[in-house]
Image 1: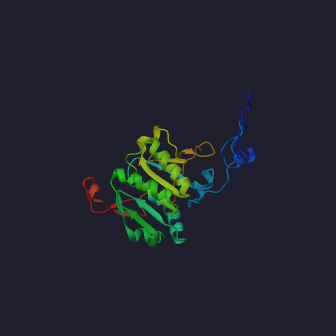
Image 2: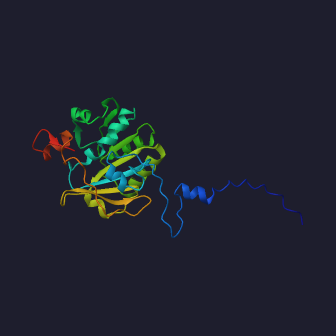
Image 3: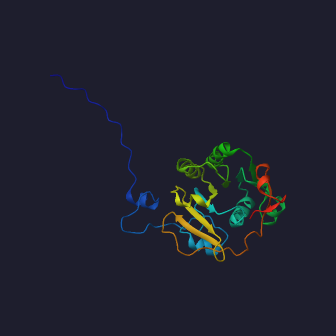
Length: 242
């Protein structure tokens, strides 16, 4: 019987060490809380940074903000971060916002309008544009209002934010709070009491029970002009959009 010819096996790539995987948060050690690096993007609110495991917004990740209605302070929450990013030359993209940003108010809040981009798109195109902006690595932060986003679409946004090393912020209706989400951070606004933000999910730790109440009153910082699609729902030509 003739001997079979030797088959050259392809080299096996070296596997990452356990310490490397633990450091990258790829795996967690059973029975121990994961070690979370304080490498988040500062929110501009010391009290909120203290509640978030990474000490700020998770970098290269999607943050989901769940709202009972428009104008509860969702943009005021982000303004310190957006101002700092644009002042450093980073591009901030707003993908299909339901209201047109009121430029003087954004400028007064410290946002460098030269680095603020507003992208108009329909519901289907907005989701695609949101993902492309996140993936492009050209944007420091991307804000989107995805109306037609299931779990798979949100996962694509999360992956895109990671690939593009961008901060992604998705504003969604609070009715989605009961649905699972791949977002690294989920925060929901509640108008009960003083009104505040509750952390529903955060990467690397259990959500804190304490809520965050912003320093400024809700609705104080930003005004917006309704887009054509929103005029029917708004009586005044301009409305608070904070």
